[in-house]
Image 1 (cartoon, rainbow, N blue to C red):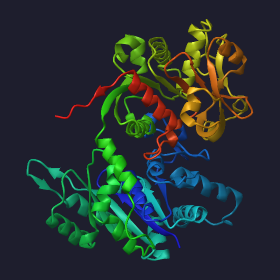
Image 2 (image 1 turned 90 degrees about the vertical axis):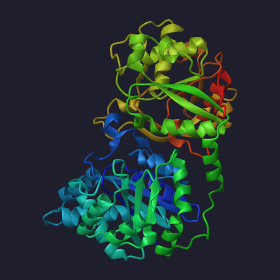
Image 3 (image 1 turned 45 degrees about the horizontal axis):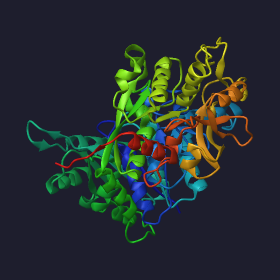
Image 4 (image 1 turned 90 degrees about the horizontal axis):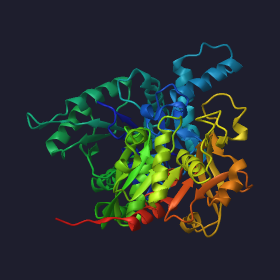
Length: 540
C-alpha cells in the first residue's frame, strides 16, 4: 500500500516547503523506495500556464505537456521520477472538474457543496496519483499558509484522507518558522505554537515539525516546541538556511529524519540512504576551481524565479566543468537604452531565454548581434532562438524588416511565424505546443557534439516557429539547421559553424537538467564560456 506524507506550512509563506518536500523525497528514494511528489495549490487558475512570470515564477513543463508550478521542477531535479500533469493540482482544476460533473448530471440532482464534493475530488486526485504511478511513498505539498481561507478545502480533504487510511499510512510534516529576535538575542517559538494550534483546530495533528531557522535550535527550544505542539521530542527537526538547496537532503539525513519517517510509516527500506554521489556533487558546488560570468539577457530579470530552471542548470553545468558560474542579469529593455557593449562587457557567455510579447525584443536582438560579432559563446532558448533567427535575417540575409508575426503581423519578411496547427486554436490555457517531442540531430554539429546521438526528446512551450519559406536562403547564407523534427517540417535547432559556440533551440533544455546529469547543451555552453575566459579562484 502507498504511504502518504502531507507537507503544510505555517507562519509565513516562502518557507521552502517545496525544497523540504523534494529533499525528503530524495532521502526516501535513496533508501530504495519509489517516491512521487505532488503540489496542491489553492489558486483558482486551472494551471499556471496563463500567469505572468512576475505573478508565479517560471512555468515548469512536463513530458506530457502539463504546465505546472516551479516546485515541480525542484521535485524532478531531486528525484529520478518523471512526473505527470496529475502531480500538479489547483483549486481551479478541482472546481472545474466538479462543475463539469454537475453540468453532466453526475450528482443526480444533489446540491453540490465544498464538503463533500470538492473535498472528495481532492481526495480522488491524491489517490489517482498513487494508483497510476504505483509508488511506495506519495508526498503531497499543500500550497499556501495555514490560516489562508483558500487552503481550507485542501486541509479538510487531508484531514478526511488521514482518518480514512489510518495513522500508520499517512503523516503530516508541518514546516514552520522559528525567528531569531536580534534585539533580545532569543529564538522565539510562539509563532510555531500558534500555527500548530491553528492546524490542530482544523483537525490535523502534525507528526513532524520542521523548523526553518537562521540558527541551530538548542535542546530546550526543541523540547518547548515538542511540549506545546504535542509531538515527540525526536519529531522536531531543524531546517537551517543552507548556501545550496542541494545540501538540504544531507542536513536532514544528519538529523535522522529519514530514519524517523521510515519507522513512523513502517516502510520497507534499506538500512541507510545512499547519498554518495549526491554528497560528492554538493562538495563540488562548494569547491569550484574556476569562476566566470554569464549574462542572462531577458525581460523578467527583476524576478529571478522566472528563470529558476535556467539558474539551476548553470549550477549543474558548472559542477560538470569545475567552475562557478556567476550570473549577470541584463534587462533587455536597458540594452535598448544603453547598448549591448556597455551592459555585456567582460562576460564569458550570453544566454537569451524564452518569453512572450514584444517588450524588450529589440534589446534581445542587439545582444545577439553583439554575441555573434564579438564571437562570445551564445545560447538562445525558445524566444532566444527566434530572436537569433531574426537577427541573422536582418544583418546577414539583409532582410531589414525581418521579424516575428508575434511582434509585427504586417512585416514583409515574417521569418518566425505561427505554427499551422495553432492558427485555428481558441483560448490561451494549455493550447500551445507543449511537452516532449522528438528531434533529429545532424552529425558534425555543435548539437551532436553535445548529445552524441541523432534522436533526442526535449520539452516545448511555444506557438511560433521558424518559417520554412526562409529555410533554404538562411542555409545558403551560413545558418546551420542542426536539429529538425523527424518529419523535417519544423526547425528545432540552429547554429553558426563559423562561431566558437552559437546555438539556438526552440525547446527548453533547462527543464531536463539534473544535478547528477547536467543537460548536454548547458554543459557544452559552459565549457565554451570557460574556454573563452575565466578567472582562477584564489583561496584566502
